[in-house]
Image (cartoon, rainbow, N blue to C red; front, side, top):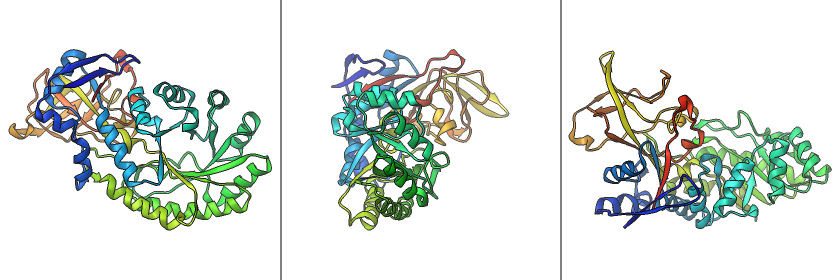
Length: 415
């Protein structure tokens, strides 16, 4: 039996549903597929039979979280990086079902706001299992998290150091370095992180104020496709580390951030292959030190555990091309297409048995910018037909809005 549980609130309602062997292979054996595959490819976490059951019960659009897929991804990362502590980046998706699953697996959590901290607490995390990685916090954000018990906070400039010194001087400081990457789709150092050459001076400034710099961190950028980018940054981080220690910082933790990739329309390296290269780089540049090493995987941890079920609302022909309108779009679960450079694969039932042609797939709002796809080849779709969209676990519902007065997708859990 498989259980479907609504995750739209803190109360889970379990509904039993029969499953066939194909359902079992899709969900229960997903971890084995990921572990043995040559590369990571996007796969739905539910079959079309399951999708029809869920759509009948909950309507569409619906985002389906597979707890077993999420747990398998976490275990794969831990097995590939046994000496690295995982602090899941809650910004990728702070849904309590995801946080609770990772908490039960033994993960820690990275938060950037009091609301994210509250979600983590609700899921079972304790303040000592959290780090706060926002380099430019409001005073209220800082104080709320501090008063709740969080004690690890990030800075990357004198201004942020002064803010922390004025309000919470007894915290453990994380000094963030700017990082460059040749393969990341999003540069997260364009806004935050100090020049690695300036790190010793910023560490010395904190020490002179009687504050404790305990951790050095960086982030190579989101969807980093080539792990050699980590190696190049680790070399710079080691120079900064030694300089900060010479400046009086009592460093004990290296935070290598996130950036682990997820498969969308393009496949990516397997977790084992990717993390093995990262582990070798850590050994090369920091293997002589007895320190804690932590990581902040977000997208790479949760993207594959969620699939969108969406329905065709209408169809037309424009400029000689079929157009299909679905009940979710770029202002909803496809927001990652706008904000995150994600390109989602649209999966149709029995696609290999039906003639396909290039078409346009658009979202449900009145905005002409709300277009999901212009280059995918799909079968002739009927109004009411369901589509599955895998790799929807990261940033999709997190950055969705209710534009045009339309509801964002409901979230449902499956085992």
